[in-house]
Length: 304
Ligand SMILES: Cc1cc2nc3c(=O)[nH]c(=O)nc-3n(C[C@H](O)[C@H](O)[C@H](O)COP(=O)(O)OP(=O)(O)OC[C@H]3O[C@@H](n4cnc5c(N)ncnc54)[C@H](O)[C@@H]3O)c2cc1C
Image (cartoon, rainbow, N blue to C red; front, side, top):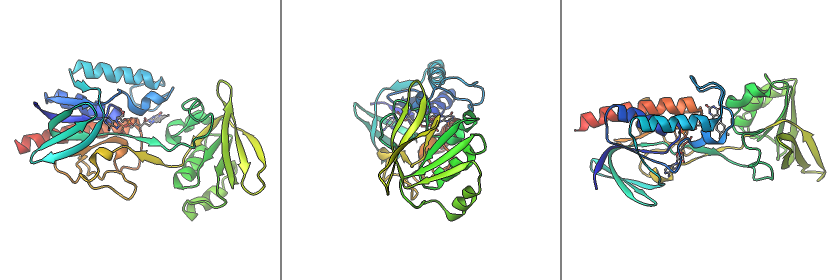
């Protein structure tokens, strides 16, 4: 089995950019992923990826594919299961094969935790949103619901209140988990209504979202709340099981990186949503992917 200079795990913005940069340094590069595009495939509208004007995520993923082809990056349609290090060489064990590399760039991405209610998956990207930073400007003059009771939910509600007509903060418990200072600030925002102790049962609509059905925990009474957008803010799950034990993680299970995207394991770099940077955006993932590839290139030169 030959040895790659760099093995990139993941085909989202971070992984694709890392592979493109690695190839432009003429490194023997393998990208392992079942898809090209990652989470951007899940959205109908990307408006904040510089150079790409308000079009579908699938369209951006097509451009990623063309860029990988243009640099002749090798792609294995596989899923990484475990990465181990033997001296200066990494072994990446996948579901269908094993690959060896001198450096690894991990970019498995993340996914928003789901409520698991009817309508949620069907309207994802069509009214159900998982990223207020991405979609807040699209809520002008709309009534929206933010589901969740932690800091992320309250910060999203605060941002959305600047754009939307009305923001309902819906939380199934009677008390919020968010920092008191955030709660206090949000209570003063005129167009925010707290709906505590209300469980979301369903996201309803026709072509687009039209309402959420909620049940009051105390009375058991159900009602529809008319909204055009629903922001699910109940936490994120990072996908990095395959490097667990190899690199240091923070309390949220994200991999800790320095400003060159280096992890605590020499030769193992990480980029995008799996890292401890608090911002989850496609352009940021791409930027981190570029840095990771350039730093991996330097690492390979130094260790040759
Ligand atoms: C509905 C939605 C709308 C969004 N809208 C925007 C927006 O408008 N603007 C914006 O900037 N951001 C947006 N985001 C966020 C943005 O898409 C992410 O921040 C970005 O895609 C993260 O890039 P990434 O490469 O780190 O991870 P991902 O895009 O999650 O890519 C991870 C890749 O790794 C692969 N992978 C995972 N595990 C393995 C494994 N074990 N082996 C091999 N491959 C693996 C996945 O299949 C995927 O290809 C949106 C996200 C969603 C869900």
